[in-house]
Length: 440
Image 1 (cartoon, rainbow, N blue to C red):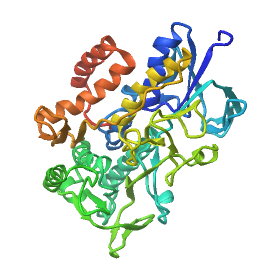
Image 2: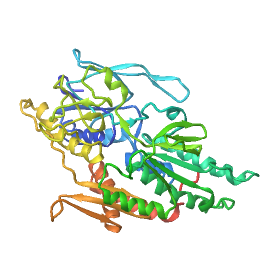
Image 3: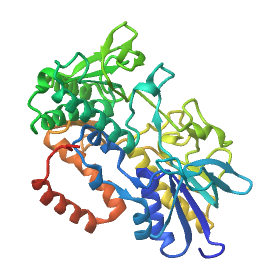
Image 4: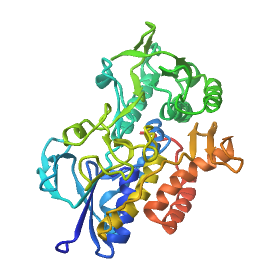
């Protein structure tokens, strides 16, 4: 590292953090104008909206994982493995916890890294709202490990049902999804398709229509409560066609080893419970000496700077940011928000490095709409700012193509047009020689 080079440390390698590190590496890092470091507690990156497909077995993560070390090498930034545990704002240092292998052996000791500009982009985790049994008996879909763990449990349950000598018991192949936001409804549809594909590979004892049940539970009165009612109605109609059990207006009060209980005293037998009912920022953010809200998000200005320290920025799901300067409405925790904020921070940090930080650009949230993908069954969405003004409802093939483009845009930001084009060609060729569902 060149002495006295401005040190930018980005904590969190999700979609926003990795995109920011890549763009700053390609500009400031490559030209030796700043030293860019990305910190994350995992070795690889997977685009979070894909996790429901990995959980269902429709997607093999080995083909869509990105190795942080390789990305850092290709794009002129450094990657450091570890979870952030604290900040010394006087010394301008962050601390990373020791890193252990799967056997509990310490591989990397506790370390400190100095910064001139710190960006926190650690995303969010599930919010269990303190409900009994969630931590012990439900699985979230926040990380690749969790998605793969759920897939293994589902796959093992189906194999066990195929080989057992007794009849399949009530709840044995019941999947309960708590939370009917985008993750919940997309997972329900993907599970319907994937379980039928899986049982077609010689698991002839299982009749998916009879033996495999999917239930979706939501405390609000409709599916997708944060999105327009027309989208909710369209998605509800599709899920009913798939015979997904919908329980709206029911709050889960307990998760047990064998099922869930709601406030209406309904009990659903299930050993496979997915929790997708809310988010919060990681709890360690409360201990950094920065102002946080009730769900642990760092409160930031419209410049994305923390209120206490102008050299510390936060964005994405872990930040409470006003939708525009002076607004009391906060930016919703969506992928498009993180992408917009990452693009702004590229400009901001270039200004900071160049010594022009007296006036920094301010973030204004632009809602481009939402898309909800129900796999091969349907895709629905609403586009904001259409040619006619306001919003426009779309569904079917056009919505599906637009949904697929979102992931390609993420890949373009990380790899460029040549690499993305080659990936698409390779995927088209290999898809013809592979099972369409993960069989292990």
